[in-house]
Amino acid sequence: MESGGSQSCPGGCVAFVRTHKGLVLLGEIVLCVLTLVCYGASRTPGYTGVAVCELVFAAAFLVLYACGLHRRLALVHWGWSDFIRCLIGCLLFLITSLIVLIGHRDGSGIAAGVFGLLAGILLGYDAYITLPSRQGHTAAPTESPEGP
Image 1 (tube, helix red, strand yellow):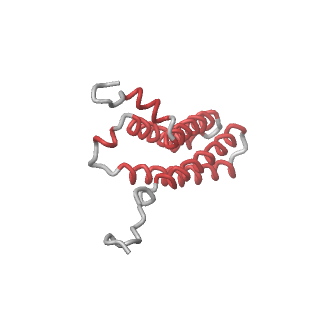
Image 2 (cartoon, rainbow, N blue to C red):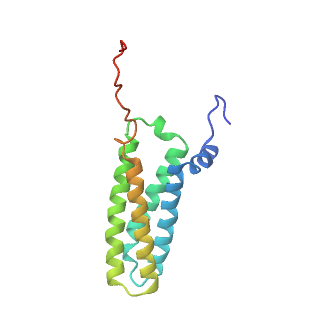
Image 3 (cartoon, one colour):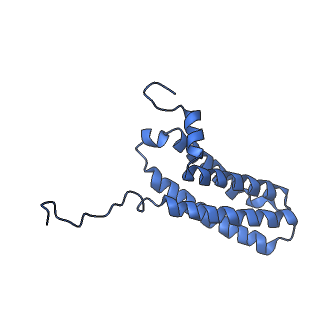
């Protein structure tokens, strides 16, 4: 622990990975690595770009959230940035995975398509739980402040 009660970046990373959002980001990273390896082993490794980009972005957001940099860099709205990352990644993974599953017959290409579909579904779920308008909404009070 550092002075002031705040955690260091490695300690914060371990604590963040145990949260729901941390586990989802870690799952995205694992699925991106599996997809990347399978695309690399297939006959047409031309679809590796989506997996590489999403792997880099997911790792960057994991470090950003784990080290608390999203609180220090308030210039960017990180909730919307993460939502847009997830939404675009979901669409790209679903499209490229369906193309690979329909058009390729080698085993590693099919495995890459399946892992890509799983990554697309996980990114869609991440987009759903990250949607900034869902967070911070509180119900309006129904009683008047003066009482009944």
